Length: 79
Image (cartoon, rainbow, N blue to C red; front, top):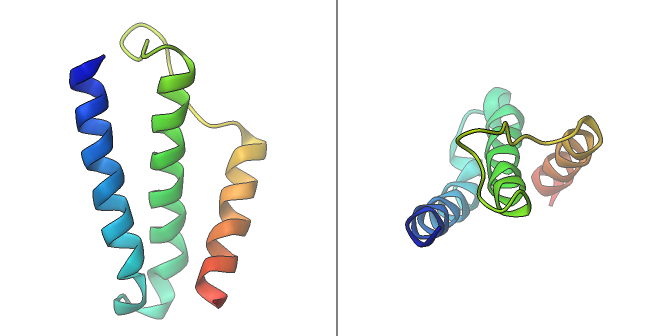
């Protein structure tokens, strides 16, 4: 769990760095890139919620969560 959490923390740091530079990307791909970043971050939370059981159990985001992620990404790009 400690090793997984170390890697997840590094991934979150990199997602933050990527997200802060999203405006450097072509307008046509910003939304899909930001949605992917938000979704993969949410999967990290899903793994935590499942007590780190990501080897024998599929950890994913629900459709409702993915819709919220899409809306959050759209909002972030408007700001």
